[in-house]
Length: 514
Image 1 (spheres, rainbow, N blue to C red):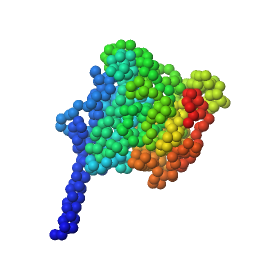
Image 2: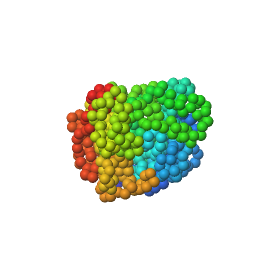
Image 3: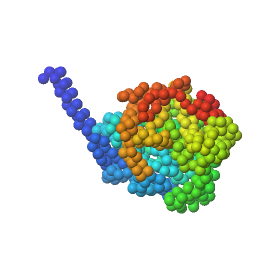
Image 4: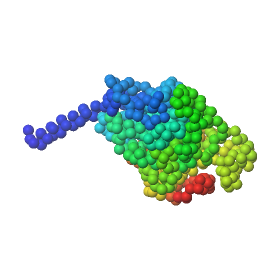
């Protein structure tokens, strides 16, 4: 046999060996803590994997600790319990709720642990008080079919996830408390760095994406030095960026109102803490004030608010998709007690104290019929639209590839404009999932919008650029044009913004123009 033939023969054997190795990823995967057994064929799913120790007993209101190794094989075919929360979502009640809830879920199309596929990690929203990585809307199979490893997980909620307290601060070696949910998110991302390779994922190509509270926590972590290297791209859907953040001292006062004695709080069962939170949250919401039950500036994990870190450049300069929903405040307006023009004027004056006259010129209602739309605009601009624009402008100023979207599709051609959260099932291409106890109707246009959004999100995760396929060209958000992709009945690139209103909110917060 010639030397060339020998080389060819060795190449064939080597290729055959590689092919055998490429099939090595099965329904059983070895993680750092032990074997996990999942389910599925083309897409394999692994659910309910502990990524941290149960945050119970002495670990309640403590940073997450490593999960203990297990012997044998962990059954990872079912979700773990959801974290303690109110009964907001009927579709979550089948999983049960437990304080021991820090688990992670993985969907992978990989056949080999060497494939190095892009990774997408989802951070759910829910006003810091409810939600779960197990929600049917967030099922990862449709995105995984597009060639990514998809990850969801749980983080602690309500008082268990966010409460700061003077006694907790005093006992901490860092002299800080609160932000436990943020630490849970970091722990999940650290687990991804250590373990996702076993599922065929690339820990060096991680896109973190989230909505509402989840998006805000992502943006907050983008200002934390300890987040460096945990993710390389971010997608923020309706993120509450650049709103006032409570200081540790302000949050401690809230925690003291929950209970002066930490010993008594530790003795309370989880359901009692949910009831206590409900008592604390009674009354109207102050839209432009700091919220104590949310990420806070604790002086340790979060050293400054995101407005300061963004303005000074102490913020991760990574590719981003940032966007909002056409009528972000529609749900708020529908549930508000503000019904008349006079009541709206009083609400606007309270929201923009010291600038009431200017605010009323921008958000006035000539008669009571205009109140819902203007009330929704106040909510949407202060909570989501203003901060999203400023973050995109930060990207343009720092040559960060940033893409803006506006979701305008009314599902099944409904007459009402889409409200906060309306895009979620489109992003995951899960229009048939149950949400709040029902499956909303959809049509062929909805299916096309869902396909295009899911495709774009995955392309961005793979390359940092959402363009491709049959999507119209999606320009980078520039300093002048402020372009965006309109995901509506007709998908098209557009430009513009609510300039007068958003400039006013920026000036009200006394932020420098960008």
